[in-house]
Length: 258
Length: 262
Image (cartoon, rainbow over all chains, first blue to last red; front, side, top):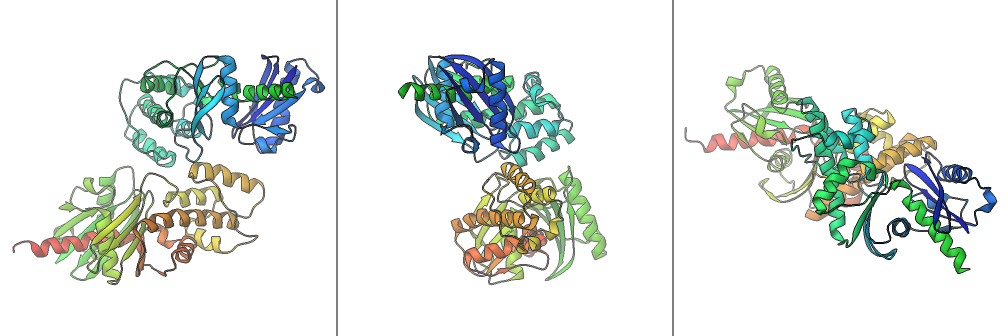
């Protein structure tokens, strides 16, 4: 049985093709202006990568911020549920999922792929990817390199502003004061990790914690999270497709229930 | 007796020189990277306008977020006390003051003497502070000074902004622009959003007339009118709402001098 999952996030859209619990292919593209067009694009790409024809995908479920605009699918599932399902397939022992996306952050406590509790922030840019992106711009570093750079610092610079807008001014004044970039970067990573940790603390995760979403690729954030949580976390090889994977799993469950 | 108040805010620096009960001169400049330098420049400018030198000033009080670094101040006093004091000088019947600055917003209650009785403040989030209006002005390429008036001249009706966070609102507004929404309608949504945020702050301390708005956003008629409608009170705005804090500081300087043994 072949099913598909589409996750249209605020920044990127992802698609996964699943055959009997095995990932056949996945694809990722910028969401842009139209969630629907992005969904079509990533799904077509994933089908092509899997060497399939569009008719061979039996059922597709969509998730993510733009899920309701996806005309390809007749069913939507919540991001929280998809994250939990996707993480459980990759790590059967998973007890918690931390999803740090471009414009939101979710912490999910789960058991056997079922959601027990969750906490999320989608109201404030502090603690989300867009915060890091703004800081990368202010410091003129590449977003994908900033995590690695932050680990080189031996200083403790604190960013006192929580708000991303105010933090940007604070960073600019630190640059003016000739504070080393790597030290500012460390402060920035500590700031975002503190916010994510605060969310994680509201629901007590037990067992393995899996970090997903675009920011899971940032080693600086992961290092601070591990320090604050006082344990190792797991990052999947491709942390951005876990939500889409979960949607494909739900699609499979639907077909099986019929 | 000549005193001065120096108010170093996050975006602007103000110095006001007071001689007994009349304002001799005041200055208003953008805050640079160095608050101490900003204080010196703002004060030099005000001194020049008043045609006196620093030696002629008997006492200087500093206020604002940069108040502790003003090198020539004799004392520093919180901006909350200074805004209440300054507003009381302009309008003795004042009981509620809203100070909307660049990086923070304060709702202040005071008694008949201008003394603070309660306050609530937001300095954590740019939504609900003047910075949000600056960001909108930049994004829409409209001068900050025109923003309020434009927001009242609706074309197809207000475009509501659903994001609270200014960073998210920025992306939201970019989307509206791509969809061809009129700038004025978007501005209406932005002013409404700021007014709503500020209103929740005012509700925490309660509103009693007379009501005074100080700080840079007092110049934004789009926010002021929407706020007046929400609280059902007319706002009193000083001829220069951005110098109220500096005036309060200069008034405190007078009080301190008066108490000192001759």
